[in-house]
Every structure is written in C-alpha cells, then in structure tokens.
Image (cartoon, rainbow, N blue to C red; front, side, top):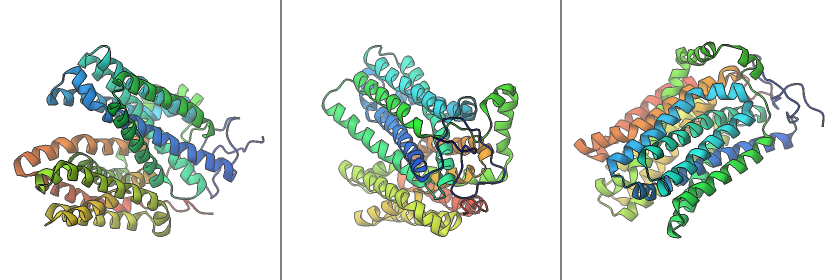
Length: 428
C-alpha cells in the first residue's frame, strides 16, 4: 500500500509549524484509516478506565486481606498518587523515545504489571509495603498512558477535523462502568483478587497490543533518533519550559475547576446525600449514578455542540450549568431538586477536562509536554480535593464544604477565553 509523505495528514489544513516523523507503518489518510485510528484511541481510553475501575472495585477485598484500617488504606493509595504524578512528568520523554505505539504498549504493560502485582501482594504475599510499591507502578503506567492517549486523541481529532475529545473521555467512563461491573461480579462470585486483577491485566495488555496497530507510528514533537541525541537534562528543561506559558496556566485553571467539580462528586456526592440531605445509603448511591450518567451524556453530546458553538461559550455555559446544579444540590429542599441539581452538576462538569486537553494540544510540537502539565494540574485537583473537602466537611458540614467547588467553577468560567481555538485548527 502506498504511504503518504506526511505522517499525520489531516483532512483539513494542519498548523504551519506542525512536524511529524513518518515510518513505513504510517496509515494512509483515507477516511477508513482515520476512523480506525479514532476507534483505536477510543479503546485505549476504555482500557485505561477499565484498569482503574478494576482496582477500585476490589479495594475493599484488598483492604481486608491486608488487614488495613482506614488511615492505612490512605497511605497505601498514596503510592498510586505518587506513581501517577511521576508518570505524568516523564510521559513526554516516553513518547519521544518510543513513539506512540510502543509508548502506549509500554505504559499499558507497566500498569498491568502493577495491577496484577497488587492482587498478588494482597492474596499471596499480604504485605502493605509491597502493595504500595505495586500501586505506585500501576499509577506510573496509568499516568504516563494518560498523557499519551490524550496527545494521540488530540492528533486524531485534528486529522479528522471534528471535536472528538469529549467522546474519548466518555469511553474512559464506559471502561470504568465495565470494570466496576466485572469487579462487582467477581466479588459476588468470590473470585480471588489475584485472579481477578491478573486476568484483567492480561486482557488489557493483549487488547492494547492489538489496537495500537491502527495508530500511526509517528511523533508530533520530534524524531526519536533526534531526541536520543539531545542530552536528557536539556529534554527535561524543554518539557518544563511550558510552565512559563500564561495561556497554558489559564487552561490549567479551567481543568482545575472542572476536575475538582468532577472529583468532588465522585468522592462526596453519595455521602453528602446521606449526611447532608438525610437520605439512606441506597439513595446516596442512586444520586452518584445520576451524576455519572449525566456526565457521560454530556461528553457524548459535547463534540457536536463544541463544533457548532466553539470552546469558549461552551465552557462558560458548562461552568454556569454546573454551578447552578451544584447550588441546587446544596440548597435542595427535597430529593427531586437534589437529583435535578446532581444531573446539572454532572452535565456542567463533563466537558472541562477534555476541552482543556484539546486546547493544550493545539500546538503539535509541544503537545506532550503541555498535556503533561495540565494533566498534572487536573490530578492535583483529584488528589487534593477529597482531603480538603473532608476537612471542611468535618468542621462546617459536607454540603457547606461544596461551596469551594462553586468558587472554582466560577474561576474556570472566567479563564475560558484561554481555551479559544487556534485559527484554522479544523479549517478545510
């Protein structure tokens, strides 16, 4: 099959300063190959969500087998957080050194090793320190994969000429739903943790090896052979230089606010329903379901809406809808109002993270470093949010603590102009 000269030939005109490296495995820029590329990225997002949900679903069993109290569980999970941050930081170097195909498989494999290792450490060698080490490995794999799959998603988005990033993040949500369901089924059937996590780890690696064949073996930033000749210290310095970009920091503020809105709901909406609105545990779980479904719907519908109206107005309206929903949930006089508020909260929080990633990826040459930077900001929200809201909730009540999220949504709306599309990004 004849191969194009440009490794990433979009249907629309590319940015003038975009560079790419082509190899004989680069697919032609036909609609069929572009769709295959897009679908491969969808699956990679789903695999990431699947791996994370598999671990979360079996966390109670891991805790019991390691004989941990709540405080000790927090310390073990800290290994996951530390590993994730390190993975985010080094992801641009992995992408430049290996290219997207091998880089993604590498990160998936590392995540799978960590996931299987957690199961082994819980069931066969019940040692908390070993479980923490494997969780750090798992976090490293997922953190580095996060950057690479978002960079690849943004590249396919540019090539196809349509907004796809929200839908890609919806596939991550689909993966979490499947992982949670399979984990719950494994728990109900008394499947050992080591078997459950080990089998899922094998599935993730095999699926990843298969789907990356449909991804162009290219690097938007630089040729790996050129990168290898650049001193490591210089490559790190170049990656860190993006933090001096004011626009990128404002995009990070958007992601901070929206990720905080998403993470706070994941961690606290069920408890806030029970403790704040005095409902039972089942209703709390149902409220979380309302939020997750609304967020998934928002991400599925987000692409066409963004293409029609643009990033800035959509982000502003999303933040406004999220703020109204959050306020309705906090002040709800009854359950129906709280559920409507949870739905609006989920819709409002659905697009901030994927749109921020797209905006950070507008310049292909620095996409990996920029995505790494804003992803770190997003992870800070996911990591710092739960203990902050827990502290405030302990002293002022969990519903009152959620007003912090309201403030961050307002800041995200004010920072929305930083995400404005580059001229000609999807031009014909």
